[in-house]
Image (cartoon, rainbow, N blue to C red):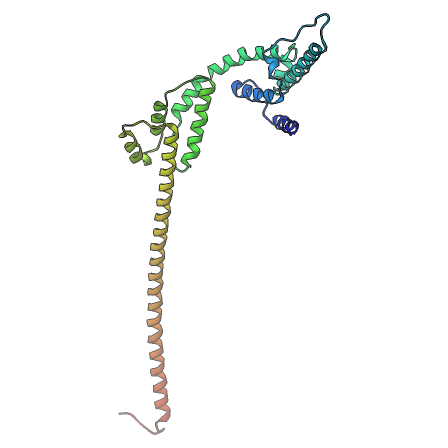
Length: 261
């Protein structure tokens, strides 16, 4: 079962986007998960056992295992890179050597992206017409990037900043939040927003139903008026027709030489 799980993970890993120089921390974390699952992560932190005279069978097997693990680990690292980076780093002598060459180079480049993360978070605005929870998940993703870069921010400041991002249509909710004396966590804020959004959706549904009923009632009234008008005209026509028939009948019954003065 463990073997099949490893095979499935390796297969899924080949479908991941290759590292092209950006988001190194994310790519590095995915690689570490793979190496830990394959039980080859140790070669990233240990040196190759030296050849010695008179070594035991256990020592030989230990060195052979390290060589196999190193080959597998370095192969996965290189395979997880773009073609350009593969050509640049294929001369590495071990997985540990390759890993140590990558970290200082791309960790430094990731550090320059911190300012963009902060700017993105500060400029992010929650808008109407899009599910609030979906937008909160996007903010949470930004905050997770903060953690990856070890950028710590007080939770109270985060919560207050998120509330300020809401549009004017949420002004009553924002006002009630700011008047609360106790601090709430990010998780509690998400729960409150979820309830508020559900309440708003229910109110919108009620308004739409009432508007539909009002429209239907007006339609029925107009239709009734039209039918009444038509009925009145129809009755008038029927009376006129009856009068004509009576007049014709009287004329038919009178003598031919009858005259009217």
